[in-house]
Image (cartoon, rainbow, N blue to C red; front, side, top):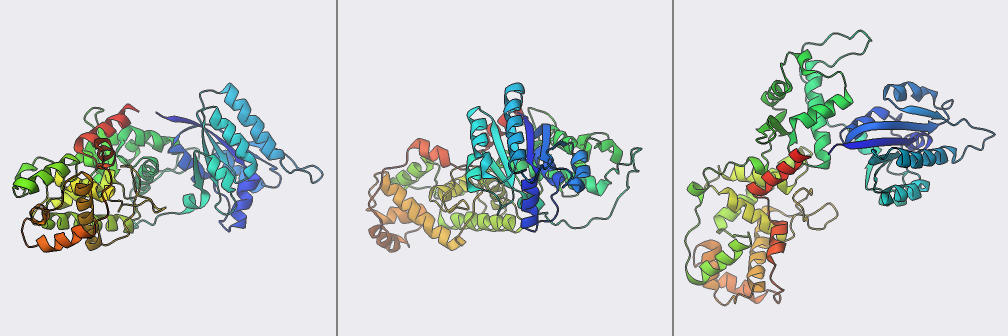
Length: 463
């Protein structure tokens, strides 16, 4: 559901923070464009002594921000803007109940009680401030905090030849040329996916683009509809598209990605190459398979881990977030081309085991537990293979299976008897078994299946 936003700016604080941290002149446009990715801005107010900040008045006016004048008097102007902002915020809460999100541009800890009061009234609060000038108390109180520096950081794009420039409009506002329009599309998609890295419905993207640039119209660039505009962007390799079966039209995601919902499973049976097992080895496989942790055999595990690590590395170099929602589907697509190929369900099982083994980490060093949480890998493929082997043995032991048959384990994990002695030594070093993971635990961390991703997409469409 679309958010209704109110933006309240402690202008002296945010402007002084930019100057102190040598970030250049405060740019209201990059702030407003980021917020328009989140919803409709119904109120935008800035508080300050505009005699002192006259050079900013034109840009604020163009951005649709109301300027509330608080002139200095006798040198005693401290906290006047703060108090006026708080009074207006509380007035808006009681008179504009349709506003569900408040954005506070300031790093001043004095706003912490206001933020906490807004949250207690079931309002979402987003803070924006400069990194070194923002109080930790304020950051902790907000539902979300965005550092101004991150908005300033622009990703470099390869230059493209300029295409037919649309003539200037009657009021003197220059329209984008076609190259700029495509770059605007990519920028908008990236902004929407910062909050939720899922494919975005075409209609949602167009609404966001028009919030930022109300004059945007794809027909200005020779396209009969927004779908044709998206197809042209896809043909240029700027975005990727898939059909939104229930909503109709397209879902849009970053170029080169293949979300789990788009996996092609038509050839699953033809590349399911696991050798048959008997006796204790088959019992172990059935147990792990029931947990969504099928260990495959060494060669297939090797292919999955190496393709997974290579794909994660490529995304990291392009400064893309790595989440299970995307990387599982992309790795499955890559593994269909390896020798031997690996079925998508087996790719999911191996990456699911990696997640449960605690090898996929948040930036803070803790294991990820969500399909949409960004993760990092701090080990090479061979180290991950060793961690997986240990994880499978520990899981079998915790499930109550007696690991007194290393020959069966060798058949399960390597499809041969050559690793019996090695596994016997490994078993001796295992810690005492912990309680077996429950079915609910396994489902919580399981890598997304095609059905799971479809349900997630349905939720986005419903919103």
